[in-house]
Picture 1 (cartoon, one colour):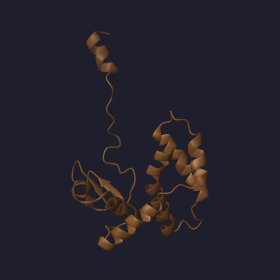
Picture 2 (cartoon, one colour; picture 1 turned 30 degrees about the vertical axis):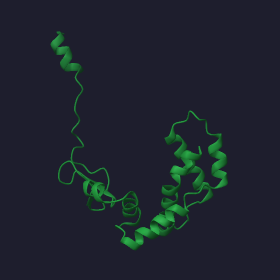
Picture 3 (tube, one colour; picture 1 turned 90 degrees about the horizontal axis):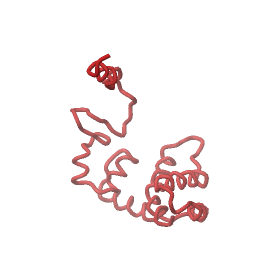
Picture 4 (cartoon, one colour; picture 1 turned 180 degrees about the vertical axis):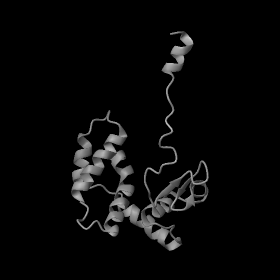
Length: 146
């Protein structure tokens, strides 16, 4: 086999078998609706990046709509109140080695929180949103404490 034939044989094959096939459906976001774009709950991510705060986007993702001014103020207060860490979580964070990857720390913290505040058996939306808000509000605290 010549060198040119060998290069052709070893060239990686581009898979197009799943091109255009939806991997799943979600109300959270859409990708590539009109080309190379991303939308969160119908809002273009570029518009959100230019004009929305972190808390507004979090509220949109978790609570399914952009907040009005009063809802945003209440939400910001709620997140501030949820920044604290339970003592059990602090105990676990203290035992995680300093050389650990921050994502491993957050994964462990999330698991610990799941044992302290387990999801209800009925998986109700209000409870799920409260869990998401607690995680969102306390991730930075957990990393800083660790």
